[in-house]
Length: 280
Image 1: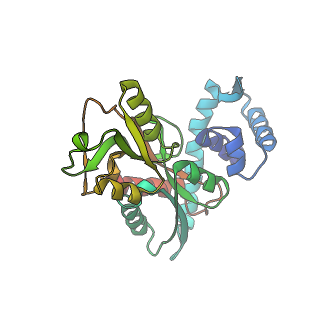
Image 2: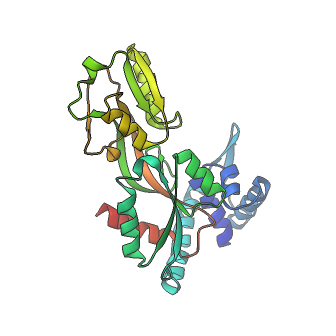
Image 3: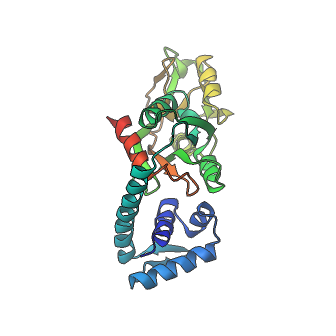
């Protein structure tokens, strides 16, 4: 089978649609559809079936994706053994703002251990923005949040949302209504927090909405508000708070997603090695 067609199949699964796979591979959606028809001819099986507006994998399609990943992984291992990252290679790395302080330095250090002399160009933003950067070829690899169990990218950590305030701050006595400093609405914790508070009938005030974790933390330290963030982002100045009036927050997964325009040395195998070191 043509490995380019297998790459496109995996791109459709990893990025969730023909449209996003087309953007990632710099092709039109119709070209992606033609590629999948060619792959179906080569495989002698129907790989997709239409459900509403979406094309979803058949059982044969799911089986082929499993083998396609193995085939492409072997191809990448061969390339890695012959090439590997060159000394001083540059990686365009995307990271959500809320992971910059606590998680990004560890990731960069681990990557450099795996590829000595590696240089970085960092883009920050929301996970939605980082996916857009990848679609445009502006980022080689991005750290994003995804729904647990999603097929997008390669899972790094599982995390959960927590409510936080300044250490020792009596927020229940001091904040009436309940002042919130929150991430942008695209954040999973934003919508869950607001919906949960409304269902509980809690009187709240959306004091500040921003994509800047440093600003959120500054407002919390100044005792202006409380917030809902990922547990990995809780700094030494903050503490996790619990109360019957605060709704529970969802779990998330943090994953690496690779752009189709990433350099050849940046293989899935290399990313998996980085993940294994980070998880050890």
